Image (cartoon, rainbow, N blue to C red; front, side, top):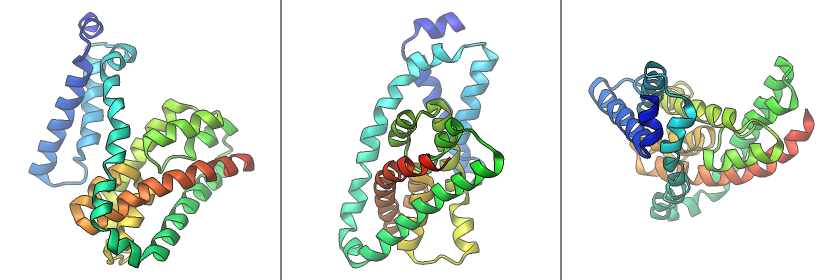
Length: 230
């Protein structure tokens, strides 16, 4: 099976799509946050690789083409934002303050946990871009001298947890305004959270889309500053 992976250029893509498709079916059928399509896809893909003893390099050789879609997918988030542009203008100050607060909270929490757990500098900077999209976070980590592969894993875990817990957390803290929901979700769980925000409503999705972009830019600057603290 390992040789088949090595000789088949797109088999990694096929497994990834099939696993995600199955996750989507399970989510629609059971309607449970635990059956997040991306989480199911990760578990199933890992299971296939372990079962058939396929090394990661062979899988990545085919699945790497999916990474090319990260940039265009992020850019497409501008569409719902454009549709809610008037609402953005009316709440511009509150939106920017909310995004800035979200980024600052993320960076401060990583700094505190790194200090509490006694992490070294490379592990610390690896976690700094945990709440921004992978396309930006990988570059930030590489620039700061962290572990890029671990950053990708942390970003994905953050996005999955944010998507699963978005609505329960909003209910717990009685966050009902659609703009506030979108900002909270987007600034804490990037693109994966934005997908959930779009399910909740158009305004939530648009504000979350804006948060992904602005949070990414602010984190690029903020991570460079916070990297000096430890």
